[in-house]
Length: 304
Image (cartoon, rainbow, N blue to C red; front, side):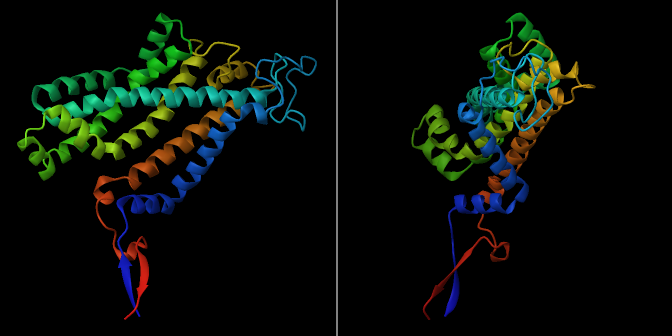
């Protein structure tokens, strides 16, 4: 009996690299639990986020009845944090989608055409990189009076830069490949090559850019809500709850502690999962067969 190595697909090796990264794996599990908690918020919580059923016990500390305590208006803090996760994650995912829709075509055009097109797009990226996102977002939010969809738009226009750079680098690497040159030589238009060949082969940086844009949007939304120009009451937002909790921090510590922990943990696990996904989908590794010593090749017995 001889042991032979069975070559797997690049996707298999990417999954194995992601699983071998313990920080990314644990973060992915925690992020999945947070997403499920936000989706099934009505089933998890006993009351709605705006119901003032506990005015008599306002500012009550955490207990068996109220796990995270009660806020100053008699609302269950656990319910508001769970519903706040729904708001923050919705804004994060929606803003990340907007970032991909903006950064994907710009990165593809910049990487494929180069020259003046690349110069113009890179100068635009430099402008967005120099301007502090929170200050610019604060100005825009004040002009449009905040609101749910306004925050998504603002976070989207400041999150596309990283997606654009990732796609640009991938397109620049692939446009010199033989199949791209052959397609152009056979008469394919540049737009056809970009959308049929280059963008599908750039799916890895697109996924990475999408995941990494989520915590940036969540932090931006929390910052705007903390400053009072983001999500408006009674819709719960972690930044908004932190702003309210600061006023009671020295006497009723639970008002600021739990929203801060919720925001910090969610942003941390999303960032760690995005970093692990970036390493797992690294093009330098994705299209290279790992060595047997990496433990990523399965041994298949064969008859002698």
